[in-house]
Image (cartoon, rainbow, N blue to C red; front, side):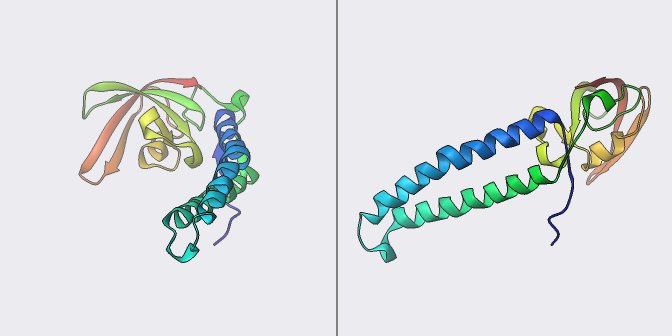
Length: 160
């Protein structure tokens, strides 16, 4: 597996990852170290649930730190000056009409590393993101989904 994948990100996305990395390295590591120290005081480690839990948490945090460092090392930041309002690109805020639900949505197109559908941040690699990239205001986009096709009309494009 190659770790050299480039992660397309917005400046805001890079900042969030840097903040999470700093928190994990400075605060979370210390908390876990203390949990392990306390759990060791309970005696026999072979039957010590607190120790096992703390070690598992430590492994998870160290894995996340490695993942964040890799993402930041391979981040390609989208320059806000390069975000066009003529066509959809990473960093664009797009207002679309969803024909299925007959409603307007505002979506922020981001790289896969910072996608969060609950915050209307969709990845440029997702089916909807791929379909919107490069399109212009007024275009109707059809996106294949498991139960058919969703249609969206692009109403407005802004830089985020």
